[in-house]
Length: 449
Image 1: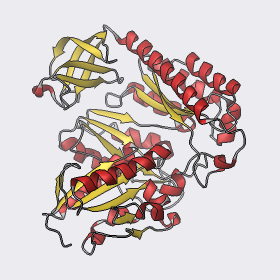
Image 2: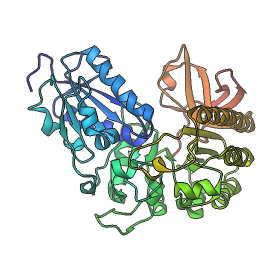
Image 3: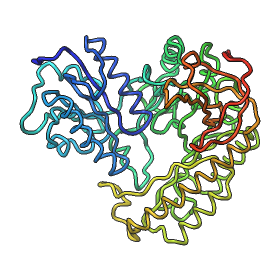
């Protein structure tokens, strides 16, 4: 590759934890090939943007970051990967400044495309397979940028939710082997990272496609049981898991474990059974309520997060209030609220009963306010308790932040010696920024083995 710059590469990730894990793995590939990793705002030879396509806003963000790269270095080569790149390669290649678009299969072979890549004055090159060809698994994990590591254990999805493009962007459900997940977890622990977050598209479906076939060779319970025995890992969190795939046995394992954190994130999407059926979700509110009740039974102080979509076609005011009242009645801790947006090649895009954009925004705001209320209620139940906090590296105006095992965000004056350390302390009061003050400290470097 002809360039006046040394071999430097910058990376920016949009979207989910899974994307962060894959970006980090690709960055390590380039580093091993002699590239120096630099900040995205630095003058780099190559800019890699890993995209998301869950919302329209993520698509627009891709274009903004292409402009950002071109501002940092107009001669830099811009490579787009990720879900948006798989779904809309031609659209992306036409963006001014884009030189290369790699699909779901090709992104892990990025090095093979760089040697002959030149700055394009027209449209960028496209290398994108049919999604049916993406039937293999590439293990990934993030490291180096955060206190915690995102460990990919599963990819793709066989569900047919009527609003979702992820199966079109990532392909069929498939899993890493337990042996490789354990190996990656040990590598992460050996680097001094205290916390691992298990991630994937549908991690509760773990075990399907583990050895290249559609059978479940292992289950999600098998996976977390193995990880619970790995020495050197101090904290493990389970990222978003479907309610129909979160079994009692898994909840009980978390309750008994010294490594798995009492923190669950369980997508709901709607509190109306009629809307859940239109979405082709694989559960109704009765099952969801049972999952929450089981968690509260064995882990009364657990943090429970919920995904919810507002403005889905057919969500009348009555159906929205059904969702609002249902969420208000549940003993949950916070919400991630998504505004429905029409996506090409999905069933929902052609459904009747379209909700106006203004109404979608209004409902989103109502649920965000409810989320804050739920979070504050949860935090108040934790005030005065003595809990271990893992401190993060960022210095925000002289303050540092960390999380308890059950995901309460805690603040104290910045102390470099505490970064990436676990401190046992008493939770004080809720502060203006929504975090909790750190009161008395007990064992400054509590190590859980």
